[in-house]
Length: 176
Image (cartoon, rainbow, N blue to C red; front, side, top):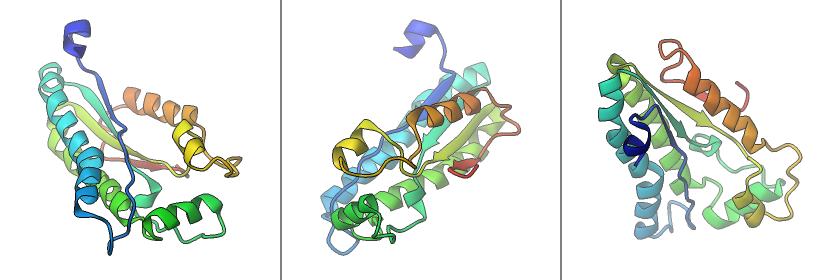
């Protein structure tokens, strides 16, 4: 549809994500597989679908959205949101975290693979962000220190317009 409407694909943002109940010891294999399918396989398929068009135009930007939970555990149980996440999935939030860690590795590998075609691949790694979904899951949480969606939108806009030789294979998190 994008090619039909606009004739080209300049930007792909992979921002799908689901969590599952259970930790590494008790997560149902079908829930694990579902998280892998949505959080990791879908971005892989999206990249493959966009690649031929970006290759043809010798340019493009792919931005994957990971999570701080790719390499952190939910250990601040005094934070009600972290405590709720830990209650649903365990302090490691392992199934979700594994998919988001895999997305970071997919970013780094795809950045190297696609650079010869003028395509940059970068990754955002947000922490808690004040989204509609998190408001529903954690209605009583103090969101005063959370990122706002528009801040991550600005990061996407920056990466979409950045020099692909300078910004490729980058993982951009909260403090950057």
